[in-house]
Amino acid sequence: MIQHPAIMSLLLSSFLITAMSLYASWYGVRIMLHWDISSGSELQLSLERRTYLISTILAYTLFFQILSFFLLIYTTDSIHSLFTGAMCAAGSLGANGYGYPLLILKLANTLFAGVWLTFNHLDSKGYDYPLVRRKYGLLLVLTVLLLVETLLQYRYFINLKADLITSCCGSLFSPEKRGIAGEIAAFPAKPAMIFFACAFAAQLASGAFSLLRNRGWYLVAATTAAFFLTATVALISFISLYFYELPTHHCPFCILQKEYGYIGYILYGCLIGGFITGVAGGAAENFKGVKSLAGIIPQFQRRATLASMGFNCGFTLIILARILTTSFRL
Image 1: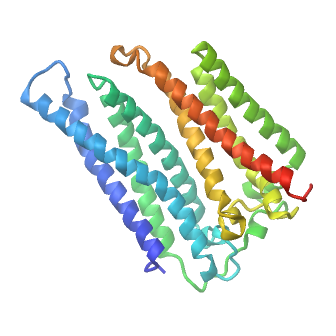
Image 2: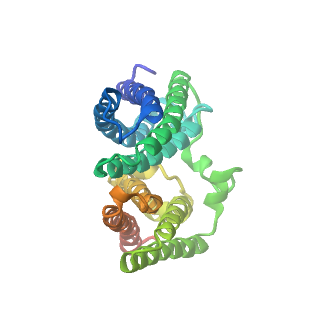
Image 3: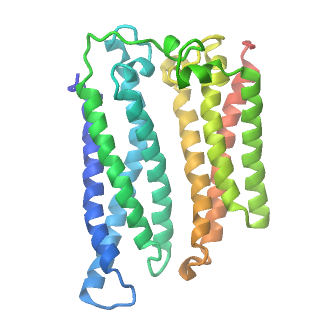
């Protein structure tokens, strides 16, 4: 099983991402301990050259970390035919006890990596690298999480057996199923629609307010996170039903397949992009007092908020178009 090309690619990419993060963290500790921008010492000059190199490497590394999330769900979907009872990635992930914890951690690390990249972008814009200690402190946390992810991913794939009998998505995401997935699937569709619409309106309203008044960026971050969670629940509760045109099929993974035009990748990409940019704009509020970033932060926040609103509008418009064009009705 582990010799499957997609699995080998995923394991190799995960190992390389973790290795580069460990390398960067090693020098990050030295930078955190000895950084002094006012010093002209040989050590400081060496650290400045090193942080430029490390930041460039990490920018590419963590970008691939974001892409690897989609590679994981693609891989688990592509191998579902190897398991008896599996219909999509839901069955593959449920083939052992490591699958769903891996998916959750992978998603968390993807969001974390995206926010770190925005911090790194801001730091590179300041002439004195004002966020250097903060970003390397965050990198240490992210590196630990990436290491856990790599180990968890290895344990997941090494314990996959082709003769396993696993559950199909219909039973995993069933209103009768005990657990979080079953409770979300059992959530009434109409209240879920109302919550989703309110969360979307709140995100747009907070974004518009901040763009017009140049304040309230924390609210943008909060409403963006709320929309992300609400949209995730809505995907299982009612959105998936319109794509499958079945009142009992709540699986959030089948929409990744060819039969549905791989639309799931676009939907999940919009959600992840909207979360990263919206939260990053709010987080940047913490650095408005930094002198070298005073003229940069407001412009960054406006662009990040517009991007977040654009991603979330894209997600919602795809859903709305499907609801209006299908003959299926709840």
